[in-house]
Image 1: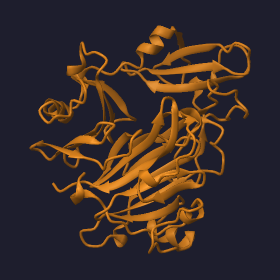
Image 2 (image 1 turned 90 degrees about the vertical axis):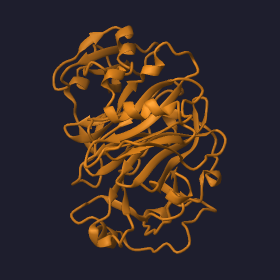
Image 3 (image 1 turned 45 degrees about the vertical axis):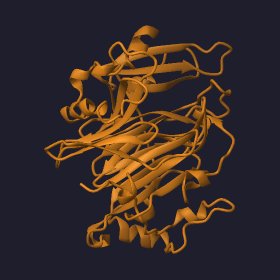
Length: 397
């Protein structure tokens, strides 16, 4: 989104100032109020902790993920360049889901961040305002890794586990392993998924990854912890309320294959047809589309027709789409180049998110009305340095 779509901000902060690091401050003019005042004014009936009121305008709004929550920064170039951490032990946006009228982020080592529309009483003319919430509980998630973010019984859910590839587990096994976001709780709530509690024989087993396969089965990986040679087992289940069946490692790997191009929503098919013409094919054919949509239960992975028979030089697209109240689709490459489709005519337009410094990439994108949410990371191999998200206004229709 070029200059026309970048936002100006009105900030009303509670926790941003509390989590500022040395040498970093919130932007001048931020109005500080008490938490109770924010909660009463922002979202009637909500018990979520409101962090900020955001108003769109002329500049992008950047947040860096810090030990005490999100920190407002001028741009990723001014982010704290801390030493790289292996991705399971770093703070980053592990996933984004469209849920009801919210965009929900699962933050590794942290909890849930939510972007929602501000009440009508806080809107001003043509200006669009959103509220940023943080739903976390002290260091509950800190020793653990979030790799799986999905919808469980109608609520966003994250699976916590101890990742032992880079280091031996130093904390006890999370109990329960799954936490959900509830509109009536100020902290993530523990949830028990029956299929994940039927462990193989032996001690210290944990579920590590849970995902939907292209055949609509649930697939999950379990691993033994604390042994000299930790065993790994793989399962699938049609219904997570029941008991899964054990499968081979090959079947597990195949469960992560993208759905075929015949399953891609029509609005995305039209977009992909324009990708090559608009110079968005990257260094090769588009390999896969990671798609977020309020029409899905969770995110889905699709293979484009152009990826069939492709080689190693293939691009990956992060996509958001919806059918109602009118068709909209937005897709970006990791470097921020993208395509946008809006309305029944489905005319495809190229655009660019703000450029990132070297070694930084975008890792996801979603829309809340006319507001774009994009996650970003500083990457080096399996390591992550600075990480966060950006909020801006969609360009003129």
